[in-house]
Image (cartoon, rainbow, N blue to C red; front, side, top):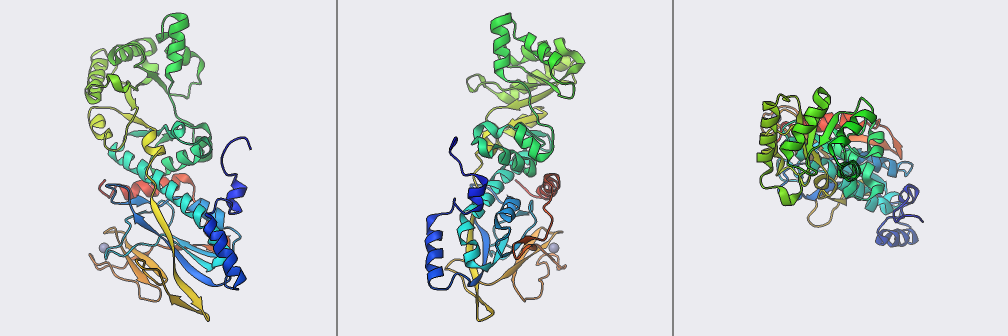
Length: 403
Ligand SMILES: [Zn+2]
């Protein structure tokens, strides 16, 4: 094997399972219990740090994982934004798998992994996008994660609200053009060999396809203001923006640097030049930089190393003699359930199967069911949605919530 990672077919065969599921399956089979039907639900145990909500993501891979496995799957549409508990403090199920336990026991590990990582990345991207107040956010996270999952990171960074992604394969899966500027290596080589790094901007402008916005990296050797103005003098109207990736050791006050760059560009007649900032940004550092006038942000580590959403899968009912028997471990709510949402108040209420749909505890209006059948007997019955649609769903909901 050339690199250390699981092949897609190995994931599909259950090879990435925790071993205790294999042993459980063997024990159940020997006792003739592996065909016992269960209802198992995925809930969120705890959210990272100060999070109040999360983006439910990763469902498409879960459905592909369970395809052909003889189970039914109910789930919230991917891209739904939720709180871990409902209006009354009951944990909200986001996915329900029903069928013989032996059909899906060894897929629990991978199922939770898909959801935990996709939701963690999408949630962080949504937080960053919200912190940027609608300004441009690009995912530069490919270099901060394992290359095998770099496209996955970019996919869910975009779903969470990023406007573009830097990884070529990630952009390909999204069906969008990749976004990027230029690295310091380009500037260093021009300076070393031609004696002038500013020639790198001209050479880039000469050789790179016209659709690519001209964004000059403006922090390599001189002061950010000097480099930005020089780039504007050389490229004129063709310069779309400058990128400031100021090293940590030179960052006295990044907001102040941005303000000065913006001011002096304007004073020199280059009001059209936008300022993109990158390097160690997250939802906590971005607001002051956005306020200072930066028009865009390249975010890597914060998104690629986003804390994952802590999901758990638990049996909540077992079919005994043809009837569902509610049963769950301590600390979990038993019984098959539906989640209802009032979209006007953004309130969720969990109810037991068979109970009449609740009305909104705040406005009294009818609530809409959130869990939709996505799979029947191993067949996907609800079309998988394109990432653009998921992203719109996320942005529409996050726009109504506080960070
Ligand atoms: Zn309501």
